[in-house]
Length: 93
Image (cartoon, rainbow, N blue to C red):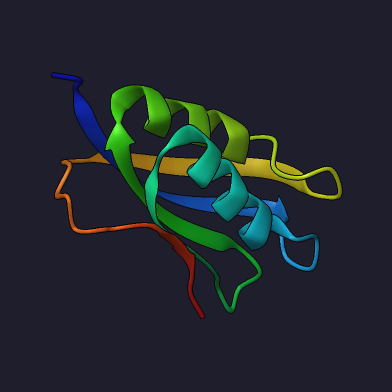
């Protein structure tokens, strides 16, 4: 059985208006992670992700770069226990 993991993160930099959310959703689906991503009023992006430890690590790495037009300054990530509470990865508002 593969190890399961979760993470909560805040991504700062030029991360709004550059397709960060939809591209994070695409990457999450590619890696097999579930959860959600949303813009915050302060210009940051917040995400919660779960899946295999490998999928979560891959998505965390992806978020540190983001899509082509983004400029990620910082990712504050907190590891969280896996809950199994998500069926897919969604963009929320």
